Length: 302
Ligand SMILES: Cc1cc2nc3c(=O)[nH]c(=O)nc-3n(C[C@H](O)[C@H](O)[C@H](O)COP(=O)(O)O)c2cc1C
Image (cartoon, rainbow, N blue to C red; front, side):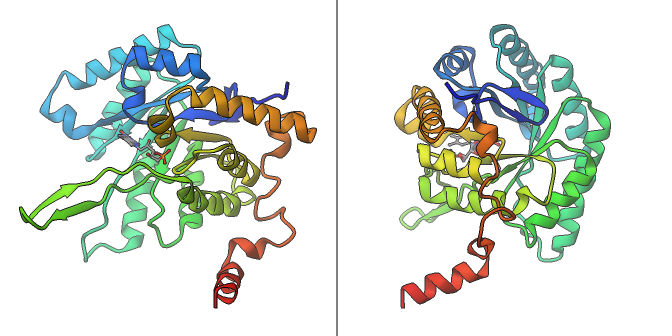
C-alpha cells in the first residue's frame, strides 16, 4: 500500500482527494457519507454575504454547521466565504474561525464588468482583501481563483506575498443564457468533463516551481488519469465535485484505490514521490506548456 498522504495548506490529508464546495458538503448526513467514501477533506458551500444580510441567522446557522461537522468528522473542514464588502469578509471570517473550521477558502467571485476599472485595480482589490484577512485570522487561508486574469502567475505570486497558504485553481463561471422565447436571461449550470482539467494542469505545472504555496486543482477532475496528471504537475490536493454528482460519492474510494494501485504498480512509495515530477521546471521540454505547443497543434492539424 502506497502512502497517499499529502500536506495541503499546512494540513495533513490522508490522500489528495477532497470534495469541493457544493451541495454535496451542505449537510451532516452527506459529509459523513463523503468521509466514509474516502474524502480526505471537504470545503463547505460558500457563505454569501448577501445571504447573511437578508437573513441575520445565516451566519450562526453556518457556524453551528461547522461545529457539528467538526464533532462528527476526522477530516479537515474548510469553510468557504464569499463576501462583498471588506467589513463583511473580515467579520464573517473571524466568526467562522471561532466556530472551529480548520481553514477558510475564499471564493472571490467577481465579474469584471466595469469598463472604467483596470486589471491592476481589480487585482489590487484582491490582494488588499486577502492581506487584511491574513492579518485578521489565524487558520490557514486558501484563495479560489478563476482563470480570467491577464497574468495568473503574477497574481498568485502576489497572493503568496500576503502570507496565504494556498490557491485553488480554477473556479468555473456559471454563464447566463438567453431564452429567446421569453426574452429572459437565465443562469445555466452544467457539470464539467475531463477536458476542463487541462487548463488547471497547465497552470499548476507553470506555477509549481515558482511558488511555495499549496496548490489545489478544481474543475474537470473525473478520472484516475486526471488525478494523476494534476499531482504529476504539482497539485497538493484535488477537489472533486461534478464527478461525484455524475457517478456517486463512492467514486472517491474507487479513485483513491486506483491511485494506490497505480503507485504500487509503478514502484512509487507514495504521492509525494510523484508530486511535481512533470511540472514546468522538471519536464524535458517545458515549451509544451507554452506557446510552442500552440504552434505544434496548428501544424499537426493543418
Ligand atoms: C451545484 C454546485 C454548487 C457549487 N457551489 C459552490 C460554492 O458554494 N462555492 C464555491 O466556491 N464553488 C462552488 N461550486 C464549484 C465547485 O466547488 C467546483 O469548483 C467546480 O464545480 C469545478 O469542479 P468540478 O469540475 O469537479 O465540478 C459549485 C458547483 C456546483 C456544481
